[in-house]
Length: 308
Length: 314
Image 1 (cartoon, helix red, strand yellow):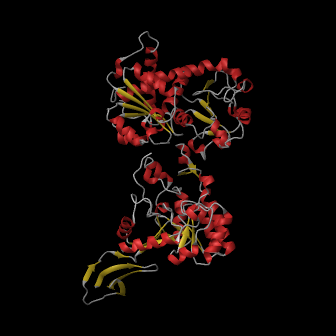
Image 2 (image 1 turned 180 degrees about the vertical axis):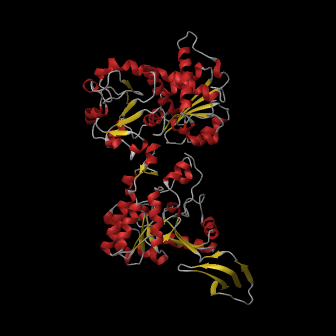
Image 3 (image 1 turned 90 degrees about the vertical axis):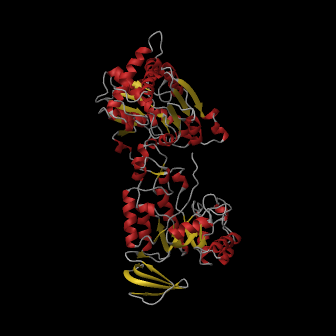
């Protein structure tokens, strides 16, 4: 039985929820390869994409996912919204609520703030990123991609590299992979690993060469230029020197190790462009899985209390 | 008008005992085991504790400027309701209470209401900007007893030194809000496992304790009275406790939330906005250190830091 109205955080999901999402995602993925890519699963339902922070790939992939499920989709982004006219976030939600949406896919800049949305709407909320807290569908598509490629999520060694501190992708992946007894390493400049982060149950590295040893999966995170401006590291040159995935460095990784990136990639910062030809196809495949996973999540949120 | 309170458990700073209390025209004239005789009004206080009127030395009455959040009437009623007969109010208002005229105005306005005594705290620096000293002499004459830029530390150490020295002439107490804003940097939750787990912008306890250390050093150097507001961390208490051994002009306060709640309660509340305070709630070891410091007298008093906010949403 699917018993979750909202999908807010990987922290709050159990393993059986994740497995249910993946089972559905596999079906939806198969559907996307047919000539008619649409199913009437959410016909008559309304999905609102409510993005208070910029997003292209997450928003478009949710939009397409909802359309493939035959839902009516309303896109609402901060730049074009009433927010720029001074309306508060809460009033914006209340306003949307008057259209009785069934699902709100929301992104906000504030960590752990999705509960505020629940207070003002009856719709199911799907978190599309809340501050540096969680980005559950990104982690789900990452894990789905790993399971597809490795055949399992059990007891893997997963390494996450880059700006751990500000990354909701890192947090969601950590909580997700941990549910399958995989072990997680994080690696980044010491300034970009949060305080007491080992307590979350990860191994912390500041040397990529050492961290790479024996891992099955590497998730490279995007580095934002603003982090340099606020002195988390002195220069991109120095960052690249120590944390970029280069042809030389990649030799230290295990054969068959999966290399992923949530995108968009800064080539020659996170990953050397010399590896583009070799690594980009899998990263694009990873992004493509986002559609099926988001269809599954929308479907479950839109048709609750179905037997799994 | 005579009021007799019968059968009370009287709580004093040094003792708790059973007694009757006789009040004549607003003044306590007798506290004895059993008082008989006639009174205009008799209150049965059997099974109840009777405390002296509380004084809250740290409140924000939001007036002038944000009367929608609190004004002297609502603030007075709230105080009286909780047993407070006097409160001090902080000057982070609009305009800022940094001059003789506004000090006088606050006192006069509160007297018109007459429910409690309101003592305005003047700003250390003009408009709390941390740039120039406000007129302490004139404010003291108007009835100001203490100075604070609460909400901000006086970032400029040399200016704070001058403030401490200059305030001595008028026997004004400097109250420090201890926060290094370069360290708190817009954060709103104590840096802890929880802030890391949820990716929230953190504030380390050093943001408080570093300024606690600096301000005590300056006060000691110029031999001036110093009071530290809303102490929230074990690290600060260790510094204060050590300093108090040799420096008697130092006092400090904490607030109820710092010895009853921790950052874990924020998580348990699912990040309810009511748990957002500044300085942010600490960890278990902070709560324990504060309780111990209260018992031992390292912390001199409890103030509420009463600070009403309007119901605005992000």
